Amino acid sequence: MNKRVLNGIDVSIHNGKIDWSKVDKNVDFVIIRAGYGRLITQKDKNFEEYYSELKKINKPIGLYWYSYATSVEEAELESKICLEVIKNKKFEYPIYYDIEEKKIFDKGKEIVSQIAEKFCSILTENKYLCGIYCSAFFLKNYFNDEIKEKYPIWVAHYTTNDKPSYDGYYGIWQYSCTGKIDGINGDVDLDYGYVDYKTIVIENNYNGY
Image (cartoon, rainbow, N blue to C red; front, side):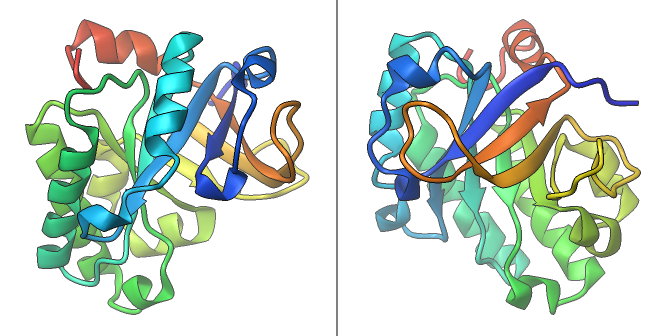
């Protein structure tokens, strides 16, 4: 179903100073952490720098917002802060809602699905292409089918197989958290991309376009 076509990485402040001129030669797209939680002070400290440097080399960019929301109300607050952080910028890849906290999954499938729907629907209403990032296990067991079919999926599963243990459709697979890329010190997350999101975004005037 999914054909491996593009190489990507995802980064945050934890990756430190990055030499993007070196990274440029080895990746097709980059997903940046914009922030986490529901306060403006939780914006990723390296977000602006990474965004600016990637625009200089014309590299397609996506982003993710790490969630701590345990209710629909908190997810709405997170969406509004995310919108504040990313306003007046352009992204060629989706804005992903990163859900991986145990306290969220402890709420059960129905609440997790409602949380994801609230965040993604608000971003969608504001003309952003919004998706879900999650591990294969939790995607399979803690999200309803409507959510998984409605929004772009970025699945995480570190395996020696040639695909993750997730049967649903996905546009990006994060296949390693211990990758090595010239220009980045230490480990970096590695991704395979299967969808031409840049064309989808620009043709539909999403993500600031």
